[in-house]
Each structure stands twice: as structure tokens, then as C-alpha cells.
Length: 378
Image (tube, rainbow, N blue to C red; front, side, top):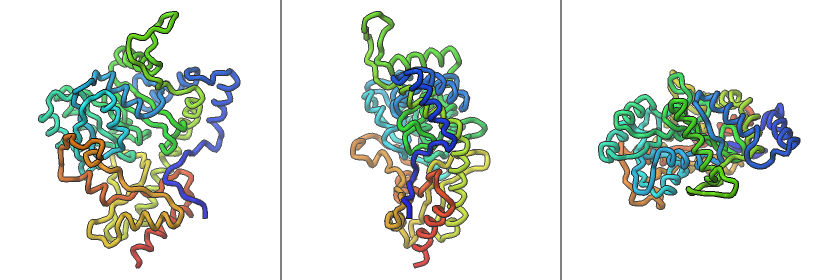
């Protein structure tokens, strides 16, 4: 039987991506910048409702340049969600700033507002807060924004996994001053590699800040005939070819969101009745994109997460653990951590990310569920 991926690239059946790539080849706009880059920025900003956007080489670079735009520098404190991938936090280290990790809550699996409030009281001079919309599930942005506004701290949303997610009528990535998206190969849409930074400030400020981001992303080259550099720059711009893939993928984004959500609903229906099984929380007034469907196993259940992952692996099916919390990562040993009952660590210990590939058939889903159910039948 065919291998089932956790999440893999899914090009449009209509070939939208190839049309934009062909145009880039036909006009010889192969190098970075060009029509596809400009249009991809406009199309994504329009889709999510952001004021402006900059197409970059990765979601990580988007977070990095958001931190620079927010004025984060050496010795500054940045409050980070503990339960996330290291790419959320690595850019803080690039700027020699100090990450402080904040626990999650069970209501969202994302940053706990109570722990965030405690962190900002402990670090009143914090320069930025980075909440994450884990696995496409939105954080409690109403409370997070209220707290951050009261403390006058910049919010940078890590929306790498949540393109297409709607929280209380707005797309994730547009609540904070900045939002970072990823188009890595495993994301809901992909450019093979790439990211986007959006800015949600007042229009004139947003345009000014995104112009600065584009400047940094193209090696901070000054407008002179010769090569003049007054600041350190980065090679962070997205290429015109990759932006063409992104433009084609935008045309099928809503289809991908609906497919991801149907996968999650299938797992809920066919595995939810197993004793000791729970799924990541979804709320009626939100539309999570369900990038990955995550199953939680009760602590006292005889079947353990590793049992599920090994059984799926034997069936040539990919799965993975929930992200290991940042305060447990050796590279961040010694960083402060604001606990809220050990939620992040508990989710890591008990969670399994199930295959959520948008090319999966119903037969594939039943194959996954059959293997999982067999562990409960022993």
C-alpha cells in the first residue's frame, strides 16, 4: 500500500502554479523580485485583510524581520509561547534578545493569557510578545491583545501554521502589529520554501515599515549607483519563481482548508469514541484550518502515544509527537518559564499528530483509523 504522509505539498489539479511559473520563464524573470512577488504580496494581504505584506524566504525570516521592525535588540525581553517549534524562538536569539517562555492553556493549547499577564508583570519592559496559532488552532487573541495593549507591548503573531484560520471574524495574523506566515513544504499551501510578513498598523506606518523590511531583506543596499550599506542586511527575499507557485496555491487555499477540516472531522467521528481519546479543541465561533489533526491520549490509558506512532510507522504511515516545549530544549536551558500548570509539557507527553495530508482519500483515512482502533481492541 502507498505511503501516507503527515502533510506534503499539494499542487493544484488545474495547474495554476505552472501558469505563473511559465510566465516568469517566458519573461525571463527568474531571479528574485518581479511581477509574481509583487502580486503574491498583494493577494495574500488582501485575503487576510492586512495593510501590507512582504514576501520572504521563510516564516522564520518573517519573524526575524518583525522583531527588528519592533525595535528588539540585544538584551531585550521577548515573551514567547512555550509550546511551539523552535523557529518561533530562534530569531529572538539572532537579535541577542532574551526569550521568556509562557505556558499554554487547555482551552486553546496556545499561550495562556493568565501566564502572559504574570510574565509581563515580571518583565514590564518586555519589547514583544509572540503568540502562536498551534496546528492552525487560534490563540485567545481577544485576551492576549487586551493584555498586551495594557502593557504597551508589540504583538507578533506566529501564524505559520494557521493561514486560513478565522478567529472572531478576522484571520489570524492580523490581530497583532505583525503576522508571520510560512509556505514550507508541509504547510497548508506551499511555495516549497518561503514566508510572508504582514503588517497591520495604520496604512502610512504599515507601508513605511514593510518598505524597511524589504530593504533589510535585500541586503540593506542603499539607493546609490555603487553598492552602499549602512546597516546589516539579509538575503531574505522570495524569488519570483516561488512567488508564482504561491499565487497558484492561493487559488486553492479554501479547498485545502475545507479538506483539512474534513480530515479532522473524520478522525473525531471514527476515533473519538475510543476510551481515553480527546482531540484538540475547536470552538463554534472560530474556523481553525486544522493544519494537523492532533489526538490526545489520557494519562491512565494503557495505549501510549509511542504505541500509536510505532503502529502507524509499521503500516508505512507518518505521524509525529506534539512539539516539545521550548523550556525543555537544551539550547534554551536557563531561560525563564512562566508555568500555568504544566499544560505544554502535558500536551507534549500525551499528544500524537495524525496524518493530515490533503491528498488523503477516505480509504487512507480508514487505514489510519483501523490501525489506531486495533490498539484499543487488544
